[in-house]
Image 1 (cartoon, rainbow, N blue to C red):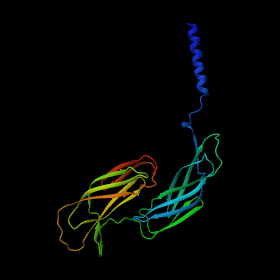
Image 2: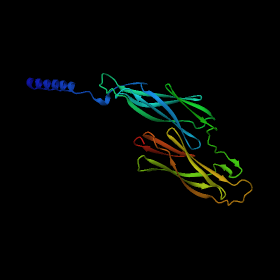
Image 3: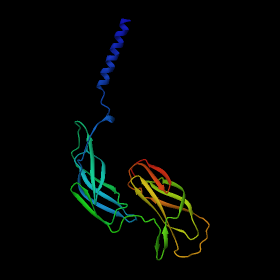
Image 4: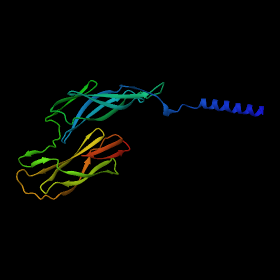
Length: 254
């Protein structure tokens, strides 16, 4: 009995000794966060759409192979967009390659609803300016046009579905179906606008102005609109149109 007890104690001691000699689990490795990236240039690209969409193209370098660029934070302060580049590196004494690591990143700027004017994008000591010639607001209220007639949002959307194509980069279409209130109303444009992880789809209609005879029967419609998902990060996104919504997921950065 005493011999068996001594054997158990020896086995337990050996197990503890072996576990102490095992390498640390790299998954639990800690990081030190900071703002060590160096920005060399900033440019602004304006997409030909309305409302306008803008992206800031940021180029620079990281000082060594251990340093990672994990996030670019965007904060608007009046007429300025301030970009903050967040970096991280492994904590502790880690061997790193000393070569500079270049980077090029695209950052979406939230300019929907901004007033006309000149805006500045700032990243460290680099700046870039862009100008909105008109207020960047999608007009969905009825207005009178001398040629097109009355423009508004009279379409009723009954169904919304998201179609994710098996391609790379991934392509995503939104299918809408519903009805128009009468025979004079037609669809003028279907447009998708992204704000963060939310796409809002607007269906703009038009009808002749003045006293026009129209059939009063409801007119069904089916429309498909592509979403601009190129360059988006992996994650879950929501598509909305009126009170309808549906989500889709990008498993990897697109």
